[in-house]
Amino acid sequence: MSPFCHQYIERATGSIRNERLFADPLVRFLYNEIRENAGWLFKALTSPQASHILGVLQYDLCFFSPHRIKALMRDLDVCLEECLNPEHFRTARAVFERKIRYWSCRPQPPAFPCVLAPSDSRMLPLNLSTHSLFPVKGKFFDLKTLVGESPWHERFAGGRAAVFRLTPDKYHYNHCPVSGEVLETFMVEGRCHACHPDAVVREVTPFSRNRRLVTLVDTDIPQGSGVGLVAMVEVVALMIGGIREAYSHKAYENPQALRPGMRIQAGCPKSLFYPGSSTVVLLFEPLRMDFEEDLVANSLRRDVQSRFCEGFGPGLVETDLRMGEVIGRPVALKPSLSAPVPLVP
Image 1 (cartoon, one colour):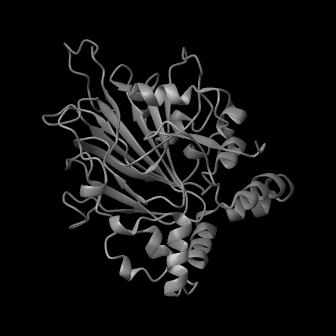
Image 2 (tube, one colour):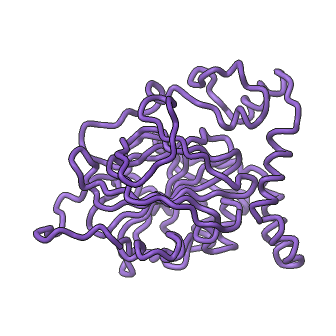
């Protein structure tokens, strides 16, 4: 097996898969040679401005003939049958920002309260408790910084987190993981580090330093998901630099940015990452949500070669899943709520 291999578990089959890491030599060069020997250049290349320029050069300016578009879609293993209007794909950006018939080709929200995968991605379930068998403090993100130094972070201390890594070949819309009422939404400025496993390990806590959109949702309302306060943090990455807010209650109709007081429905489109790789982090309060058992069991596998495990330690094997799949449910026995918990930070 290659020492540079990165593997994950395919949820649908339980099989171990080798990931084809896009731009692997370039990312390794950037986060090793350039980072260590030319700090000024590394800082420039991971700025939002540089990511925007790189994105335009990569996805907009290159002319793509119909033959090249078909070759690109084959290379990315894009399913034409699930795409809306594939005949309109003229650039690489159009392929990456494709819309799909998610109402028929992705799992639909079940009748019971639960948490859904917000994207086609590779997921890590994390326990933020300091008493966890495999502590994650100081890895992937700093909790306080992740939500923009706001007091909200205190609500998630000792809770659960889920990290969803979107690779460049994935459908790039994010969907709502829960149903509830939006309490707050805000952008936190930052850099544009890559979400490549090597970059994450080298930078240790890149998700709390990248540019990111934070959305806080109260799910303890009628017809809500019933898992308490949830934070959805959408993290931009190298060659992305931006997120287009596009919440739609039906299909992709009348897209709009979320505002405090809006009700959102699990499974509906929420936003679009610009092309590249990117990450979504979900935060949950303590004792409010349990991950599905197969996801936790997968993360603990010792027969899978993960660069996250090599860099951070065991318990960090990803599971590949589709948007809309159930990842967690309200705990069977919730803590005493005889006195209402205030929702203001």
